[in-house]
Length: 192
Image (cartoon, rainbow, N blue to C red; front, side, top):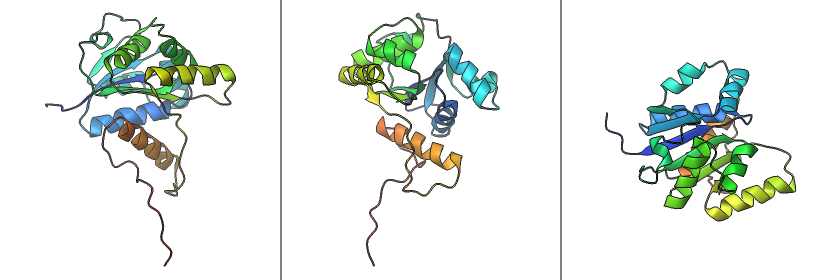
């Protein structure tokens, strides 16, 4: 199969693994070539928060990388991609990206996206936030990252958790230029 788009997806150790898994499934359904990295803590959170096995999750990606493989193709500026999503993004990962501290493949691939001008979306999953968290988000945004906490919207009147997750994932994908039908854009209601 010939893919027309290529995306890097990282899943880190913040709560909210369901967002990363839904993103992976959505990209697969949209026939996007997915290059996936799951941190050690990301794998643990998947096991703790879902009924999925890591093997099943990884089988959905086209290419899988170990988080400590700094020699992987996605660590190179010559790797062509439409962008990268870190869903969910832990504060530790945010800190590495914001400070250009590339100790692992997720942080290195994110840094490469920023230096090459490719979209980098960080679904930062933490609350409440203290000033250090906010400072890190500001630093990452100043470097070019899209800060996208997975905060649900309710104007579509979601009925299930899946509705909430789908709408958020759909908005994330749309923000980096991947068209999808997982969410409906806001439509102003007119008085009749």
